[in-house]
Structure formats: structure tokens, C-alpha cells
Length: 286
Image (cartoon, rainbow, N blue to C red; front, side, top):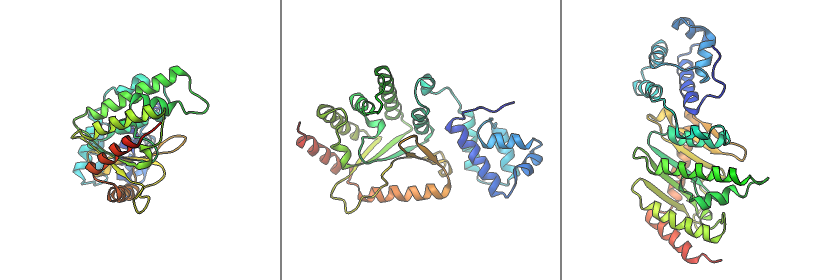
């Protein structure tokens, strides 16, 4: 049976963990296939996320690889049994895959979502007018109906995160994002008011790295770090100009955890960040 052509982030991640499990056991694909009584191409397809692995199959692979990481095994099994139709599927044939993957990444998170942005308000915190201002700056310009669709998608993405009791959002912003005007001064003013309102939510933390910080603590690229059911299932999204990339190698995850620790050390507290946003609002002219 031919495998799926475009595996979801969840399917790719399950496959990547199965491949990592096999490699840590020092087994080749052919060896594992013989142990399980399947063909080598089936192992390759599973590890690429192109065919599904059942919870029983994951257990069999873990036993063959002598993996004793029970929390990880159970978490992978949970990802299998929690498969469902996702809210962004209705946009699948109408919006770029990169936008859908960002929503899927946030949905994939089991707990906290940590973000870092330098010159733009994070997507889940954007107002509709601000998001429209972001999409309006594309070159070549997007058609009006596509801008409307992208804006609706961004608003739905915001609701899915801020109204999800299982998730918390930790947003780190550089102060430059508070003064960059996507859509004009009035749009930015309403966006800053919205930021203050969001910062008062129990499940949202908004912390600003001020211009006066002794160094620029984060990368130029925007980041989203999602915490999985277990640390092995954490994922990093690095936003690039063409399309985001997703990282899950343990060494890379450890590196980005240090990046966020450094950003947190440079950022103001939640309360001082609220004061800075209010002061920026007070000084906003135009």
C-alpha cells in the first residue's frame, strides 16, 4: 500500500521517535524488520510518517529495541489514539501548508508554548486588524479574499490557544515589536491594548526584552518552543522567510532551552512589561 504523500507534523514526529529508538538500540532497518516479521520498506514508511503505526506496534518496536522509557512509549501511544479531525483541516486546500503546520505545531503541544519575536507581535496574540496589516505587506500583494481568509485563520488560531485550558502561553517580545506599526498607528494602539488585556489572563505570560537590556538575548528569527507530553516530544519551530522548519533532535532542543533561559533572564517581569506596554501606549503618536 503506498504511503501518504504529506504526513502531518504529528505523524512525522511519531516516525522520528521510532527511528531514534531503533538507532539508539544499534539496529538497522532490515534487522528490526526481521525481528517484527515485516518488510524493511514498512519500517522506512513508518519512520517517515508515511504509514501509521498502531499503539501495539509501537510497543512491539520498543520491546525489540529494549527501550525502557515507559513515559515516552505511553506518550507515543497516546498520540496514536488521540488522532482526530483538526480545526485547520477546513483550510487545507485554501492556505499555504506553512500556515497550517504552525497551527498544528501549537496543537501538538501538551502544555506550555513559549515564543520569541523581535519585530512583530506573536500570531496567537494578534488582533484581526493587526494580522490584516501583516498580510497586507506581502509582495506581490495578496488578493483581498486570501487576506480575509488568512485573517480569519489567524483569529481562529488565537482562540484555540487562549481558550484551551490545557495550554499556557509564554510570549517573549523585544520592545521593538511594541513600536512597529503593521496597519498604522490606530491598529497598533488597539493591539497594545489587547496585549495588556491578554497579559492579565492566568494562562498567559507576556514579557518584554527592553531596548535597555545589556545585550540582544535571542536569535533574529522568531521561535516557538512547544512542550510535549514528555521532554522527548518537545518541538522547536524556527520561522524563516520562505517556510518554518521544525527541530526535535535532543541536542537542538537542549540548545533552544538555553536560548529561552537567556531570553527570560533579559526580559522584564510580567508586571514591569505591562507598565512598559502602557508607557508605549501613552507615548504613541500619529
